[in-house]
Image 1 (tube, helix red, strand yellow):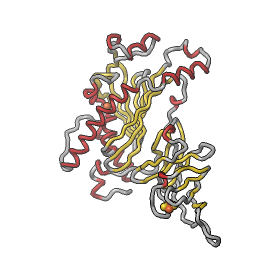
Image 2 (cartoon, helix red, strand yellow):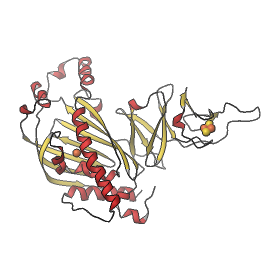
Image 3 (cartoon, protein in one colour):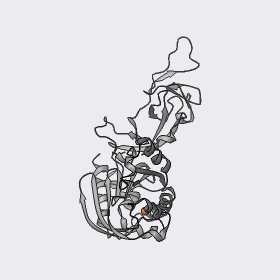
Length: 347
Ligand code: FES
Ligand SMILES: [Fe+2]
């Protein structure tokens, strides 16, 4: 996992800081059947026990090295599909269907990972030591004033290309039809060892302050450009952005390998301005929140498709000509590159 000396100089070969919580799946994706995921080259199987609790084990049967994720959950255990050996949530082999009288299940435990189910996602920690930090907080997930939409990004590219794309608001040029803002101008940046905040000034198309303003989401002619603060933050290893008071977006990363990255975008539209709405019964507000879940899906998927195309082209160009360097004018990119390097190399 530690990058070689040569790799340390090349951001596109950079490893990750394993001492962080990464998102490997949405909650919905893990049902009663085991699910195989990969986090930085480590295959992991997720399965729910009878209480609905998620277990995360190495996705490898120690008997013949096949994937446990091909098997099924039996009660609180996972059963390998090949010969039916079973493993508990602690990774111990607890049952072999053909043990002879004098035999016991072998002591061939497999690795387990700290796992949390929070904000509709499954978070995994692959660091060697016990976690000493918490997953990124997403208070809007449960808050009744925020309407969520989730989109998945799956790209054949190193995670640094995605992070740089997310921090570089000048690429709004690419999203003519989908972006909620235009004319971004970088104002200033703050940087620490694990965080970069970039503050842009932009022109927003939307102002979600009256009930009728929701119709701006559907009718272009109702949109009026007005200045808004646009912030983007790299909170290693994840990303967060705000556009004025109306929109917030998170991007939760799952680097799969040096040339493949998965991530989840969560877009929140704020209903904070609608004070009358907040006086309604909680049950009704919950109904609205759930009913409107996913309302920005078309827009998010449109943005993702355009970004993925560019990111993958950057990755291919890098693979064809690793020595070639681009010309970067946005200072936020140099900042996030420093943080990515610091985090990956120090760990
Ligand atoms: S390979 Fe898993 S039980 Fe044999
Ligand atoms: Fe984009």
